[in-house]
Each structure stands twice: as structure tokens, then as C-alpha cells.
Image (cartoon, rainbow, N blue to C red):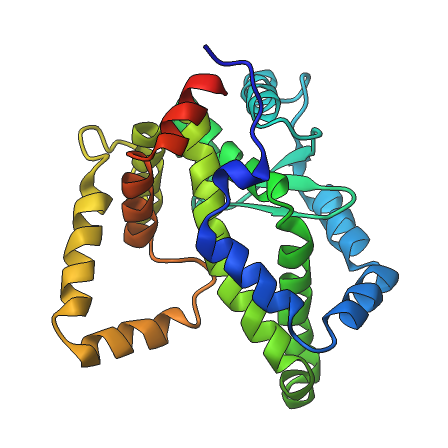
Length: 265
């Protein structure tokens, strides 16, 4: 059927929503937001992006731009700027609350097929739909400030930094859902396998991370000490483990919400 657009509530993972409430409950949150916007860090990142990366347009990369336009229409967001940057590692990111932009690595563009690349773009558009960009830009700013102010920074902003770091991991689960709706869960699972392996051809291996996710959960459950070790290490990750993301999607694909969205979007 198709034709309808998504709402943030359609794809928002419960852990993502809970993490946002934690951020808003941190003392000084509102004051930091005002300072952040006043200092114009968003414009700084946008300028750096424009200066060093290649913008995708109908003239520069017409096929990629066509895929991009299709995704934007399905997700139902205002069209952000899209760039490609030079990095053989498959990756992508989105920043900016008022002037939003998406950047794709050259590795992702070269190793993903058309549908998988749409999945990567859809993931980034999911961040925009869920209004993650304000928090992700703040997180990037606080991370960069740490290298300048060191211990003082950690003392002043530690509660907010830790809350943002926790949220940053959970936000990926919502964005993954957006990608699964747009391109199909099986296609996006294939993209995740490519992100994990770095390989261009993963034919027949789309469910590999799901199976490893089940094995990983069993491993953590086999020992309290193993679970503590793994949870501690994950505290410092910017993203959840790829097998965890794959398993979360595998579970969500059987939900009524996913089936309805696949039929209507």
C-alpha cells in the first residue's frame, strides 16, 4: 500500500525515550542548552562539513541523491544536506538541530548496494525524525571540550555527559527501526553484517549477527561476572554492540507496529 509517513512515536525505542527523560532531569540541563545554542557550535560543525566534504546533489551524484530523496519522502522529514567524506571505514553521522546535515563515508557508499545504502541513510533520517540531533550535537561538543578542559570539564559536566553517553547508545535502536521500516528488516540486517565485517559481499549471511546476538546473551547470562564485565565495557561505547542491535531488530520485526509500518509507509 504505502504512501504514509512515519512519526517519531512509531519507531521510538522505549530505552531511547527513557534515556531522554534522564537527560532532561539532569540539573543544569536547560542552562546548558541555552549556552550551547548561543555559542553556535552547530554552525561550527556545519561549516567544517561544508569545507571538507563533497555535497550530494542531482549534478554531483544523481543516483545517490535519488535514493536519498526517496528515503526523505518515506520518513517524512524536511530534506537535510547530504555529504560524502573520505574514509574507507563504513560509517555515517548526522548533526545539527536547525541546519541538519548527514554525512556518509566513502566506504559505506562503495561497499553497500543501493538498498543497503538507503538503509544507512534511513537510519540517519530516523535520528532526525526522533529529534536526536540536538542531543548528538551536544554530546559531540562536550566530548571535544574534554580535551581542552580536562578534569574541570569532567567535574562540571559529568552527570550530563554520562546521561548523553547512555542516551547515545539507546538512540541507535530507534534509528535502526526507521531503517528497517524503509528498506525491510532483512536488508538492513545485511547492512549491519557489512558494518561488522567490513566486507562488500555478505550474500546469505544477513542473519549472522542475529545468531551471534543470541549467543552473546547466553554468554552474559552464564555468569554474573561476565555480565558485569560486559556491561562495564559497554558504558564507554558510543553505540550498542552490533549483535545487540541486530537482535533488537529481529525481535521488533515480529511486532504489530513493524508490520503496520511496512505496509503503510
